[in-house]
Image (cartoon, rainbow, N blue to C red; front, top):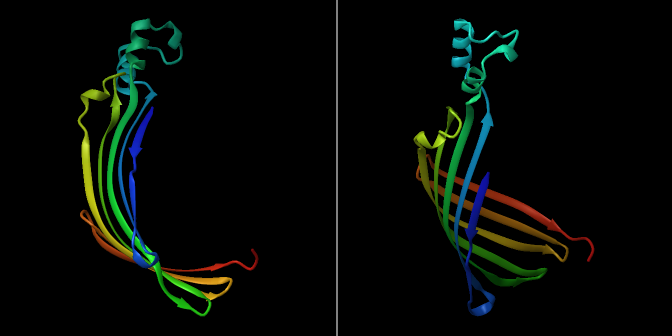
Length: 183
């Protein structure tokens, strides 16, 4: 079973000289559960040991014995929540011989929360298990330059810095080309 929803409003503000500021917020939620039927191995072995269940003739066992063994499942419930704020300013910087140099800079804040419970239990008793919980905040800053090299070739240079509350920070540069030999 999967239940999920999200809402993502965006506000775009036109700035002077061909620049714009895009402000985005996102709130999301998901709840993912599953139940996988199984058998209680501890009870099964106990019934075999006590003689109430013959593994070579299971059909001869009392229905209560079989019901006690099969009233078992592996189950899990995971609830995730996400909150995100992002602002990006982008626009033209100056005219180059092969086209307009464009730039974008932005900041982002993200909060992730997750809680999960899982295990083997009697059918329907997952709700009696406690959740384990985790969360983190991520603060980011990023930028990109789009540089026209030829009429049909652009170079892209970007970098992103992320600061995670749970394990530290990371810097990630990125380089790329976009080639359009025909219309």
